[in-house]
Length: 189
Image 1 (cartoon, rainbow, N blue to C red):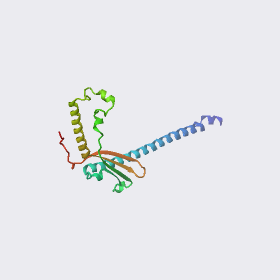
Image 2 (cartoon, rainbow, N blue to C red; image 1 turned 45 degrees about the vertical axis):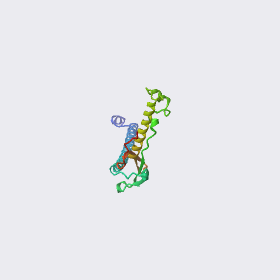
Image 3 (cartoon, rainbow, N blue to C red; image 1 turned 135 degrees about the vertical axis):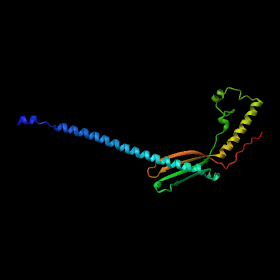
């Protein structure tokens, strides 16, 4: 009988246990990675929906801009989408006037800039000559008029779309043009 047992081929209990352990390890790793892939796909789909809804609202603003007035200067409103498919999404629309900083600081005029900016200028811009003062006054007048025109014509708009359940959001910004505003082109000399 002892000879019969030696001739039979098979797996020992230890070999079977090692094979089952390895199989369980690889199955667990595979299922975990698939779970992450499904979650990543769901998040990607959510981001895509949020982006498309934000782009749609921005395009609606560009094609049909609001009537620009002081009432819309700091508009901020939150609404939900009308479609049943997007009932759990809301958007916040913000419209405000474009504000441009002081041009004297931007263009390094005397006493309105840092010492590094003054040293980098290769000219006699800061001399007290009559020509330089006239040029600086003319530049300031032109820049101020340009600033007023730009601030009247260009407005800023921002749309933030949010999923009310997950709280994920996506924001897009753009500039809107007020075509009804008249631009002043005359500069008094």
